[in-house]
Length: 84
Image (cartoon, rainbow, N blue to C red; front, top):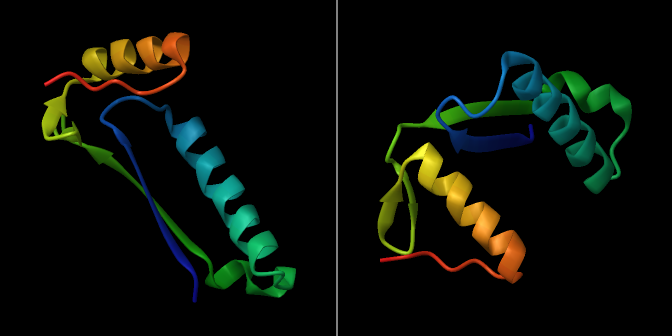
């Protein structure tokens, strides 16, 4: 029975977006396994939220606003550059 655990920053996604992640990850697992659609009821996807400050990169915990800045800076630079 396939199981996927997706962790996102706390408060980052609406219920609708979390539900869409569940659907898309389920679809991706079925496709990756080249499995029949009949396994769909046995695919489990859990979307969890990391507590504020509990999202760590390179040994540092980030808040949601800091993560937004980090991602924006990474997109501009082309590579992630976590600060210490």
